[in-house]
Image (tube, rainbow over all chains, first blue to last red; front, top):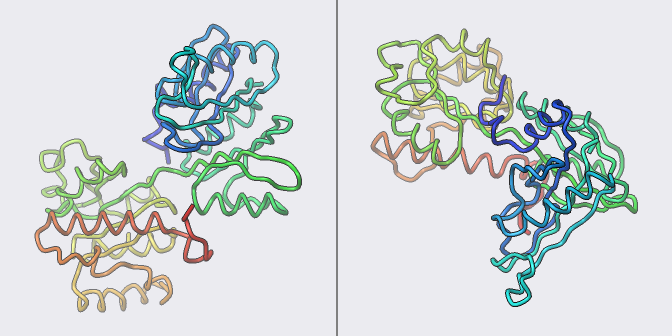
Length: 111
Length: 236
């Protein structure tokens, strides 16, 4: 039976497959660990193409920009990377989570 | 990620099959394990536990580090009977993110006017289930009171190992139902899984209150499934 709750226009893994089938280069970012009050649960995905288009989320919008720019490099190199984000240091304009949590995000190329 | 693994995990999710994407965080290799597949050793034990808890996470096994991304089908709630209780239950189920649908062959009951926005199947359960079978991630609540309508889907729910099976009716009504289900070939053990009288005991009286009791019982059963059997706790 079909799963009616999977929305092809919003589900990151279905979008990644669609992009792949269109011949686009794709990276998949996955939250693999969280500490404290993390905005998105372990297992959440952000999918990114080589032009920096993305779908899904790994935080509440706090670190997506940084993940997307890393992902574009990873699409080129093909080497997966583990990224870690903690509390933002506002004075240093550092990327981080204002909620006070910490997350680990695994970013890999599709294929 | 391997393109084949992505296609496999998406196919499993679209078919409402439980599956885990296992990624070796050392070398980035991944594979899909479906519920029921055998995986040996420490990793296999961790995978079994992840299927039961539904929790994704990183595990250490055989000196390597693996990320297990668990994809369980979202729970579905099938209500047999387009009655007053179901009218109250539908909006509550939606809020709790359960996909609810209603089966009732009595076309006077199963009307879109009474159930706006709810998938309605105005046909006999025998017919509807042939096209939309129950699975282990389905909850079935039979609330028509009518054995001609309720009995078949109750037996089907036990056979499909639905995580929740509930039936409306007094203890006396249920005692008679038990006899009929036995005659249909259901075992005592299976019949013992039926929640009857239906719903958590909160002293519910009105149809809306009974709907609260039913939904709460469905949630309680879903969140504790497999835990008693495996002796594990979800505390962390």
